[in-house]
Length: 95
Image (cartoon, rainbow, N blue to C red):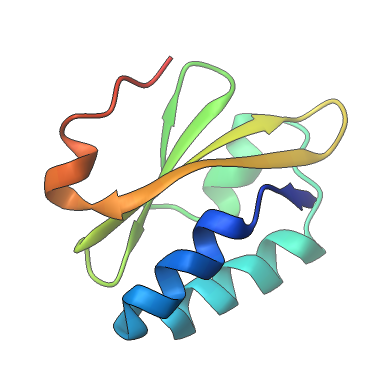
């Protein structure tokens, strides 16, 4: 998959060193896979939550942080929408 809008990830890694290793691993794995349907994502990340057919939420650092991405399965693109603390995530309007 191709990851677009990596800047929020880079900014977050600078501010939250504890998330750096897991986010780097997430990026590496996502860059190597090809998801065609939401179940493919769940096979790679069983604890990820899918919302509708296009949105996914990943727990980062034992559920301390959340990563929201939008996935275009037909083109192989993962768009980083937001990353933040659990408290920030509670305020997101995921559509």
